[in-house]
Length: 130
Image (cartoon, rainbow, N blue to C red):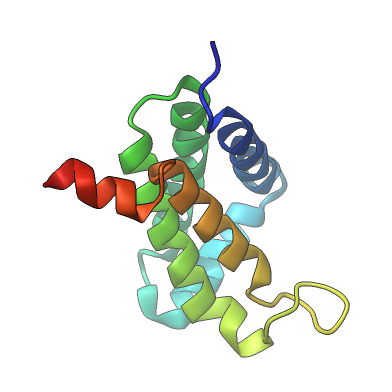
């Protein structure tokens, strides 16, 4: 039986895989690493880019298997927030249409991951903790 978050977990997994795997074979991860080097992460930019992309693959697998979801979502949310701060915020809101490379997609993914983390809502989470 599929639980209530399966469709969201599946969709996010596809997005993470399609966003990461091609770059591992076409030089995109290394290009991202060079960007990170220029942004102050030198000399760790390329290894950090690989860790980020591999974390996306790991998160996708965890979400599909419905295992270690809290860790997978938390790490991915952190990466998406940093992506907004470092790349997308300065480009504005829109990914396409009213702009290019903006933060709207990361924003949506963050809230989908939060919905996966808290399927009953934040209020249900608070009741569980009490």
